[in-house]
Length: 148
Image (cartoon, rainbow, N blue to C red):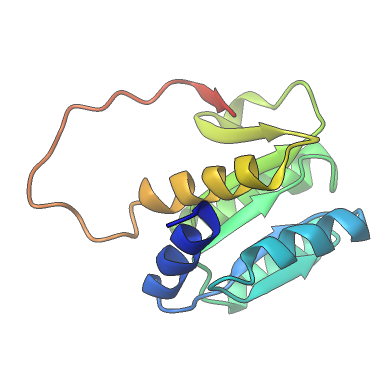
């Protein structure tokens, strides 16, 4: 099984709920949407304002955010909305510094190849609190920022 098959299975398992892609560069947004086509519908937003609207109305499985798609206040508001709705999110960004309120989260630095992006989304879905809890637990410590 290759990585794209794995994410397709995971996304299908998540009942086909869409993944929100927040990206202001159309080509990057298209690329991310194409990567998700293995098992989930991708919803794209070019602004944080539109992303907040989608986060309020859609039953999302996850979100991939570009930190540069709005000011710090708009990004913080979007992250708070996603967290309130228990939507796991990660950043795919060229920004070197993230505001402290966005930690701990998964960060993939631009540019990254498809396998790195699919692996990060898979990790996001697997570690999401939305997934059913295992019958046994392990002591896992999450670091402040995981960079892939």
